[in-house]
Length: 445
Image (cartoon, rainbow, N blue to C red; front, side, top):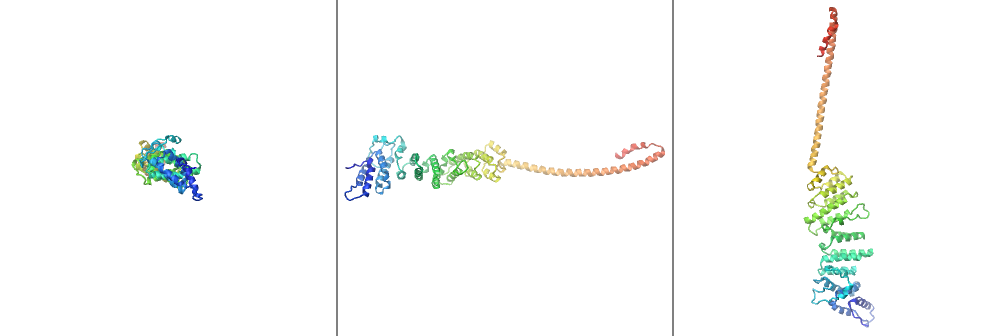
């Protein structure tokens, strides 16, 4: 019984041909391969659904070297169909390499999920691809100058759909292939949000560091396109920190030191604002080391920050939570603070903030403090001087009083002696002794 080749039985015929080649019993064994190749000469007239069905049925031939050419031919025509200008659905089929108009079997499209529109309409149609064939399909698409943005969106859509309900090994295999294919694309065509989601899955699957590094190399140059939410990843298992600070530091290193894109002022300002918000989030973490906090601060150049208000608030929270930080570490952390970029309210707050070292406070305030300290020292000197003067004065006064007291005692004794003599004379003259007593006080005058 002769079987007529068709897109739906290509897989069966190819398998049969491959089997009969292995079991060749002589010239009587029919060779189906020439019939299949002859049938493929009319592949340009196949409908989109026939191309998809044939590729789906024949993808197992990818491992058969003798029949790889058949698979390649089907795949090339399918991709050529997609690359044709103006193709927005299975029903608008034309080719930029042929003057032939492709026929379209609209009734057969009902079995396909063609509810997409625009450049993404074919995404659902190719989800059947095995990961090994996916690599070949994408590389062929890129050779046809496919739009890299469309390809990247398909890769993420394929990855999400394939990993849904798959076992861990299948997820890892799909993730490895997708990562390697994304590295072939223009970074500007890749969604930063999708890359973060891919990174989360790779970390969750505990993939090797080499593949994690590849994802980070894709995310780093696009850091200005992300938001704070995507940076707040939980810390790896075994770390006490609330968030994965090492991950953010690696992204910053790639963003600033990589040479993928030009770092203009707008990109720098976006990253600086986002990092200041990140600093405020991680500052209260009691397990965040001073050198890590310092690294997060110093990675951003001063020119990228229009305001230092958020930076000051982060420093204030960190120093209050980490009371055990040494003075040297405090100075190292706070030296980045630019007083000219602080609002007036926070600048006043800084001058009264006791957790900040004096070296981190405005120079005018420090100068005022220094003057007050000098004045107090001078006052202490004057105080000591006057005390020594007063002590000398009091000592001189005591010596003078002692001399005067001795003089007084001597005069008093002399007066008493004279009084006794006068009393003897008065007795002799008959005068009362008390009459001369009124003169005794003159000795004290």
